[in-house]
Length: 135
Ligand code: NI
Image 1 (spheres, protein in one colour):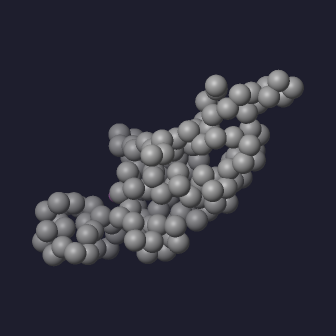
Image 2 (image 1 turned 120 degrees about the vertical axis):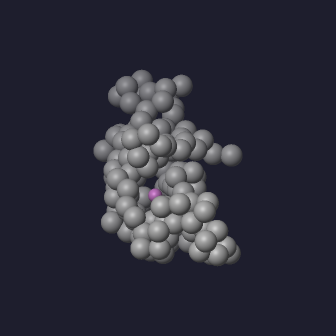
């Protein structure tokens, strides 16, 4: 089994906010991230698939095809968007790095063919990332 990773990128806005809580409680838990006017991140997304390289081509999946699927199904949906309100597959999801990684994995898995999705790793900043491998 070989693991193959494609990196993609998007910019998006969000805020961490639990509507069941008061503004004070949200600010206490999420600090600056609860800012009601939102804030942005430059996200780096690493999608890893796994499989056996084809004996004739040496590849698991065509990276151009993989990139096209990730872009059309995921990053084009997220890029320059407000993740709290504008993205269909994030409806009702608090857009933390953890939840985004999981939601992207679940959404992307629907569209991958010919290879198996292993993980989605999402960097929100240089130092903070979340990784999801499926349940
Ligand atoms: Ni943030």
